Image 1: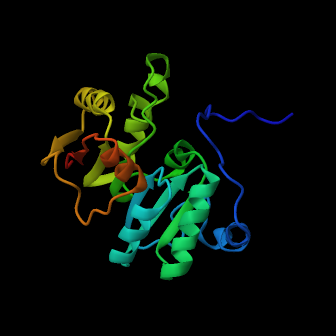
Image 2: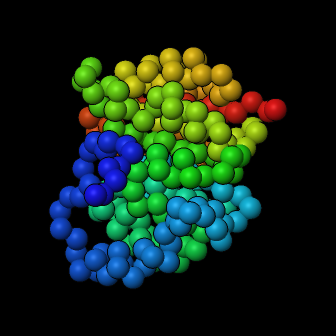
Length: 218
């Protein structure tokens, strides 16, 4: 009998059928860049960042190109998004990207403590209905893992265009000891590039919020 997955997954796993080249990338390139969940930081550089739910990979690829001295791990369960990031890796010859194609919660549990300088959570699914709020990634259990894997003075950066999710995040962060907000939430993050989700929010007239949290030094 198969063991059921520990986490219940919500949301899409795939969209439109992949183009032939994207299929080839998933078959031939993804294995070279995949995270080994048994040793998730194998072959990584001393400096590591994480992006949870990288969508189409625009931001992750942008940061990887600007920071070749940093290993950037991306976690994403959406097939089409992973294929798009692989296209960016191929086009830009990026060698400092690693991909966890699956649920980020599985990766977080497998990681050793104090391994990341920076963690991004950008425009996550807001699950706007009240009965769906419990599906939001920002929750006490996930925050505990984020805190555990951040280095002292490490940064957790959260962006959203949904005011209710921003309020939700601030309330949860205020109740969580060890991660403190700082900076101007109206200003984009360092070396920011607009994602497709942010571009959609701008077109639809929603404002952006960039929340910065820092792990307290021991």
